[in-house]
Image (cartoon, rainbow, N blue to C red):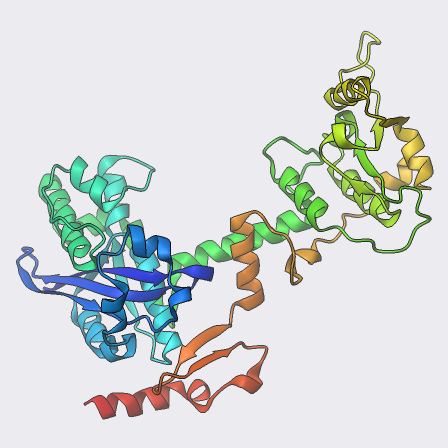
Length: 418
């Protein structure tokens, strides 16, 4: 039996596209005797400005010049492929990320996908230590009381230390690797046709959740402090544009609306933002900086009025020489030429603007999913002569013969190498 442990280091992962600069591995038998180990130092074939200099300065253990003077990924491809496909088990720490990076470089150089099952040591450790938290390689060594090799973030060293961690867990539990896999089946993953199963499933789930959220928010009509609807509300404020020309009743005015109304009227607030924008105004979150404030009275059981924190801040601002106009909510609707019933019956506004070029998207998870939907087929490749190719499924005119007949071209390359 052969166990392959591998780890990667990246020159850059900007835009979610990783450029590999180290492939470190350790090959052992089932008793963890080391049969072979090495670290392939790789020229990521990018210009200096595309390197992630935070990673260079804080993580990588070699000079950029050493990487740049090394062979490119395509020159290591068949060695890497043979190592992976000849192994009985492929293992590593957070290996889904590394498998994805390998896929990206295979696509980049127009090389066939390497398809294989693999197992994540980090997930084994979650069950072993009864934790839901991710644990780093160095922290795992410490908690397992293992004296691993030094030089953290050298890919070969990290692969070796990951091997030691699996060996220790199996020793403590007194189980074989196959038995450990039976105990922790969720540690198994697969990459096939350039797609990592677990990553794809997570992205599809996020796409579904994003679509549902854009259609109806979180299902309620409330804008809670840290809720999904508040995030959508802020996105709408960041990106709203006039949909039609109004009469300009709020031309150049900054408008704020009572918290008493805002917190339980998510859909209505989105439509109010659009209506005010159509009238030349801007809805702002900081009521103390507004020109117009619309108050909304809520009467409690004892006939007293519910406190409105925003109104309080507006009155304090006016006491300090601001000149904010305070109007009733009904007056706001009158100026917008809409009744409260009409406002209540307006449909949910569209969030299609999030997919437009230049959209402001501050939430990183949303941005990742939206970019995937927009650019899922966009790939940067490098041909055998080092020429860069960028294409997408929506721009088939830019495809090369190598793109269209990749398997045939790759077979030619394989025969040439042999």
